[in-house]
Length: 323
Image (cartoon, rainbow, N blue to C red; front, side, top):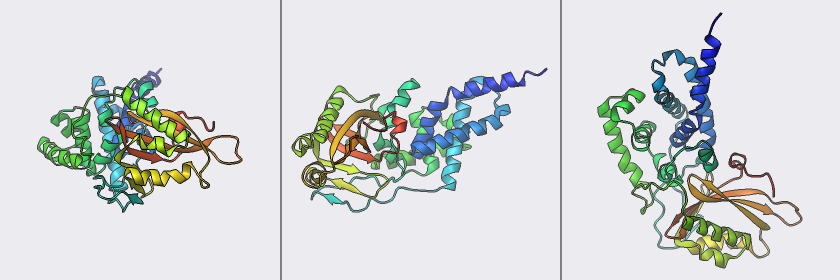
């Protein structure tokens, strides 16, 4: 008689308890929700194969993080990529400085519902899109060091052991990584705070934005946007900048002979930011179909950035296939 099946089942259950936080970790490393799913699966496969190397049960979480980090680094070595220089905008108001960050074409949003269901405390400033874009400008190993040290709070020694580096190399990598990240963050976003979710003011601004789209009223939209608002649309190399340009681009889709149709919006949360899922009913149709998902960055009561994604992640957000 053997006890091996019971031991195996116990290991799988204990490892599974860390799935969601490992998924968030891989998401930060990669910037892609779908790729993070694949790398978490790879992490559990590697952990299963190496389970006999786990010497201290109390160290299971750190051991899994080490496997996940190195799985992500292996993936990035096999599929190297860097943000592209931001192309010329499709339209921009004169006199505005372009955003500092480059184009991260593989960027995807992360549903807050999944974080809440797993009861994870994820600070907004460590998962918001601006931060995700900024850290994608780091070489993969520097990115790993910054995440382990500054986000997870690991010591230099723990980080060095996880990555197979010296403590001196970890400190050097962190010193290089921090200025790079600051350069690619929005100008007003240089200090991390501890907010875990959108504020009541943010939610009120989101509702005004939703009302403007559903009412197809550009004049309402004007009152929600900051003068230097800009919109990115990954993976497309397209962006708009400035209030006049933004409203001019969206007005034909909302009103007039070229209007796309009627809109319905559902408030959601992504990356600890307010977001809205848009459904469109074109002329002659009876249902509203998924169209796009917009994640908002709000400062001082106005929308400063809208990152617009397609509808491919609607199922991950638990959104209905039609309205």
